[in-house]
Image (cartoon, rainbow, N blue to C red; front, top):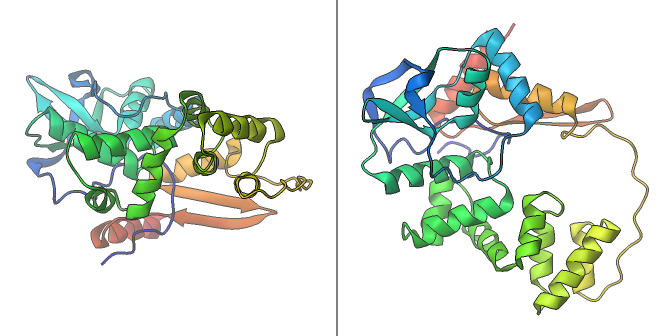
Length: 288
């Protein structure tokens, strides 16, 4: 069995659920961008990061689209299943055609399920969108948490913890959507018994910029520790490192994460099957 995780990153479809859906015999082919439309049931609600999209546009202008998007036939055209970011970037880059995988989709429900699974696996969703996607898989498609965990390559407890976030007050869920607090903060807030105490802790997290650990200590009745001055360091969220991440994502067609601190760090690459591992290794061998 292939190791599930060498690393993390964003946006790229490697189709780890190939056994669930059958590609059309044509395999990878080039299709005019004008013939492809977006999926109206796309589970991702938030827009794409502007800097990240601009980086991808620049990369596509130089190297083209390395990883095909996935579509299915609709009438005389095609609808996106996965790869909306690459599709939009290709249009902005001035391309006329884009490489695609064509898959057979039985109905709208299957299309939505494929889009949900792809987005969840690629971490294109914020924590609340992800929880909502799990909720759709559980309630609309009648998958239990074990089945969802298997489908998206996560532990069952991860699915359970994610779904719990939907029990938060709406303003706290909105705060997670906007990135003001993390899912870890949200789970700590859920430990408070009432909506009023949850909101009170949430406000304190925002005002005092508390860590998840500090929020958990408050829940346990411990005083929040005084914040220690942080040393200046380059984080993976900086524009320069994020740009390098996006370049590697485009080059390798998979998730990549760069952790950089004090002049050193790690580059993590993710793969989803033995064949995918060989594909990534072959690409790495060609880099000169």
